[in-house]
Image (tube, rainbow, N blue to C red; front, side, top):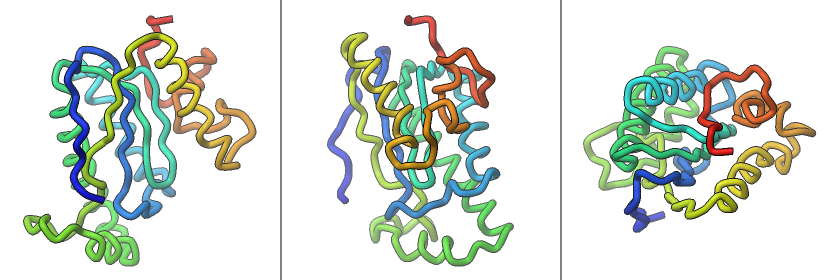
Length: 178
């Protein structure tokens, strides 16, 4: 897959984003790797004025609905930081199979690093109205159900579905738009 042509022209509005692990390698099968993502999103919300409307983290990708003043930069920084933390974790735990795959799948022009964790781009889609926002929230919340991992969206702990059901969740999200 080549470099993304998608651009964020209205960062002050919510966008639907997808961040995919290179070659769909299943990295988020361990609680600790998912926690790297949760902690990073939490930091963005607390320190970078990142408004997170919804999310889901699956074994090899994640979907977000978010907005901030410079969304492209924040997502780029998020991916860069989490890549470093994920590699550090995988090296510490000696997860050689995944590390070899991340090295093998690295794009040739990425000659400043040994590994590539994320696919390039995040395919941002501007959510122009409330109907689009609701449709994308339903899509991300039902993603684990469609994959057969759970029967109900609220059963997937790595999702904002619990936030919208007024249940305890791993990460706060902005729900005041309702």
